[in-house]
Image (cartoon, rainbow, N blue to C red):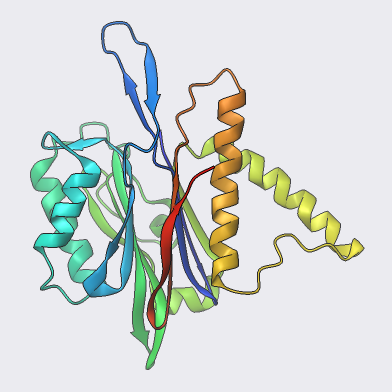
Length: 250
């Protein structure tokens, strides 16, 4: 299981992921978790961008994070997010078994800056198979049986929808928890209590780290397999490029 978050705001781009990998024995059906096993968030240095992954743990017999690292290193000639996203989708379609269900099996968050009316502006691609509810809401039809380089938030759309957050992986429990928690935070505002009181981009990524850490601890304390956990990788990007990156252990 996985939890990956990508947020676009006027402060910049913030990304965070857990690092645990869940293994299930096909014979017994029993599962166990190895924390700090995968680097699900990586930098694309020649694009000043970040990319994270969810879903399938291997591609062509190689761990997905290592496959992605090799892909990044082998394609430094590309100079646009669009080129990277389109070629990533092409390579995935060439290396994955056919999708017979039309459901999402694997996906990648790609975020960086693109010029819009002469101003560097956040841009977000979600490269994945399965349906795209985001594009569907804009009347755009895709083929869910293949991996598509979905440009969920182009710079012009960002101007009208910021802030924007995309969450993938095992996010249903996370979404329920934080919908309730953020509703509670909103009720504190008349008392003069603002949570989160973000003043800068680091504050935003700290809030994403807090979200993943909270869900990780809830899994650990429950009867569920603690499939979200390990060190939390984070990355921030602003108009000048990569702003901060690292990993937090708790």
